[in-house]
Length: 374
Image (tube, rainbow, N blue to C red; front, side):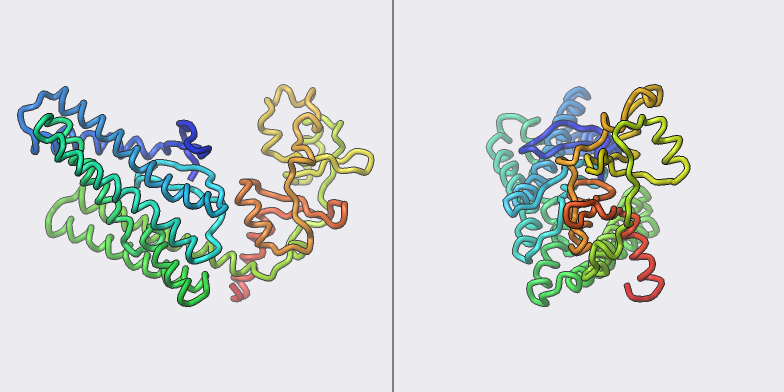
């Protein structure tokens, strides 16, 4: 999930807020200020209620970042790059560059987050007992943060993929069965089942308890879990369908070549508009120098196209990741995901012999699906 607002970096990991985070932040702060704290501590002023509620919400979401950092630190120690941590309506998500390659690594990454939340819960409960006789506001803040962090740890250990508990369950099935795809299928099936249970539970709350807000929220969580489990399995199934496929089998051969001296207006009007090509190899005097794509062009204001050459905006050869034609297509997929690019030049010897793009992979998967082989 891409963040809408970047906050900065922790341990080199970009931290961001998705727009949906503001919705839950307002709801949590409002609930604390108008219901939770007034019920537990009557007699405070509105300034106290809203002040403590605001501080509590901020620390709570800092705790969610700590939860995701738990996953991230373990992932990085196992050689897995973490792209970002994003806070959104359901909490937080750490986006990693690739799946774990062993059940033990999967287990340790998955369990790290709930352990951090459990530790924070215990810490805040301990602080509550230390300050409860000295300061009501501090005690209220500590008790809620202890309670909510322990709840986060317990909820995340529900064995429904892609929750942390579901990933722990997948690692155990993977270790026993020895098959990552089969383990994902079983875990995703359980995750979808739990998602449906949440949806049914939400409807029961609406119909029997007449609590529309709580019921819809529970059902919404179930819908999210079901969809996430389904999507996660589809991604793994797609990887399995690509197993054994070489890059040269899916690449587009003879990629379009453009000289570096061509200006962007000419490139757009004479090449892209007539061919529909979106990526070009930049070559001068028979030697390729780099890569230019629509993404690079869009960074330049239209009024400057005529005066900007392709060579001025291309990604230099030294910075372009490539794959060899005989490599496995899964290697290309993993590299595109890790670098967040849509295409890679394919090399044969010292020459560029093609381009492999996400479109090539999608077409292959669609064909296999129609043939019933994936």
